[in-house]
Amino acid sequence: MSRIKIGFLIIISLLSFSIKAQDHNTATKDDSLKTKSIELYRQLFWNKLPKPINWTNDYEAIFSKDEETKLNQIIADFENETTVEIAIVTIDTIKVSKNKFEDLSLHIAKTWGVGKKEKSNGILIAISKGYRQIRIQNGDGIVPVLSDDETAEILQNQFFPYFKKEKYFEGTQAGLLKIIELLRERL
Image 1 (cartoon, rainbow, N blue to C red):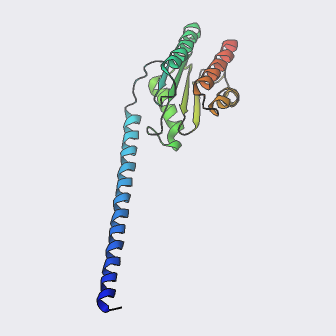
Image 2: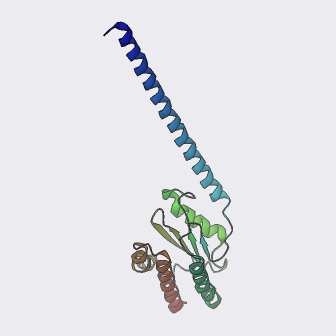
Image 3: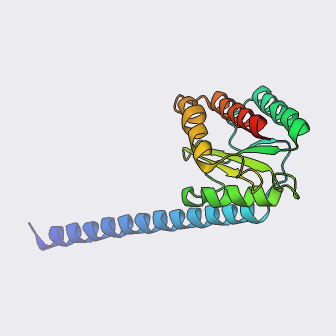
């Protein structure tokens, strides 16, 4: 091959490597910007939690309006009967990282003031379909009545069998009714 052809091939090769490197750098910058935007959004959500609209706040849109109404009615009836407050919140993955899900659920319980202040008798059920996580936060007044082991059993026996079938309303309702059943027996 002539020197001109070899030189031309070298120049074209260098240009293609340069273009690929620029594409990679642009993609890396885009990913970094996206990550920073998500982190900022999560921090803003943490700092400025929306006020609860009802007993059930479905930020992940896993319940229909009728299902939300049913859950709200069950909780409202029980609260009227016992003063125990139960809140349900679903949290999509854009609002929290997986490793901060439990921290956020506790933060929500405290910020929203779930339970009567003087009795600390609130329960928050936090669900993330996207992360396949659920957390039940029992107030200090509930802990002597409903142990952590019993709460874990409710998760295993009522919530998880339905959740594995992607029947989130059915699992939430079954778990909620079991919690209410146990509290009715003990309060």
